Amino acid sequence: MAVYKNLKKLNIELPAVAAPVAAYVMYIQTGNTVYLSGHIAKKNGQPWVGQFGRNIAVEEGRQAARGVAIDLMATLQAACGGDLMRVKRIVKLTSLVNSAGDFTEHHLVTNGASELLAEVFGEAGRHARSAFGVAQIPLGSCLEIELIAELA
View 1 (cartoon, helix red, strand yellow):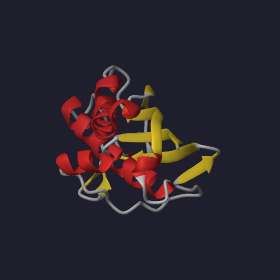
View 2 (cartoon, rainbow, N blue to C red):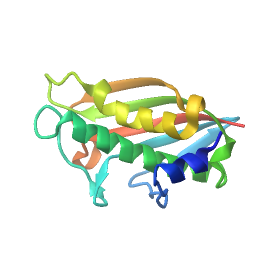
View 3 (spheres, rainbow, N blue to C red):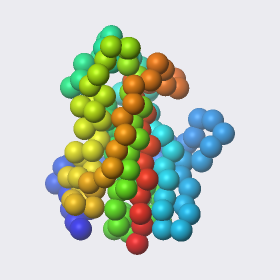
View 4 (cartoon, rainbow, N blue to C red):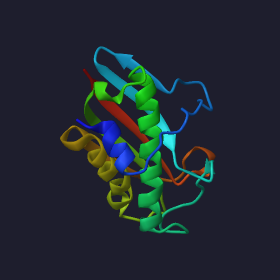
């Protein structure tokens, strides 16, 4: 698995790990499984505020989800002691999409994260997934995604 080669090819530099904004930790490991707390979408370093079906389009959402995946990979790298090569598999994503009641394309928004993880981790990046529409997300963000991974 050429994770770092793929990141370089995609011109992705992982950011510093964000600090929690409430009473939780960014990740927890039990056995070989690591659980990453939800990461919200950001634009220019601030929460990407908005609601799908009201003032954000699906294509913008795909980009927001891609950005969340990059932040998740940074946290995952920290959970792996600085070495993403320890990731055996991305097991599952859970995506919360801030959306109007009649919005039904949560899955298309979340594809931005799923597709990037598959590009970076190859077959090990293909995962199970749930995508839900919710009435609101902390700080008004348009999207929040959490991740579960298996480590070697």
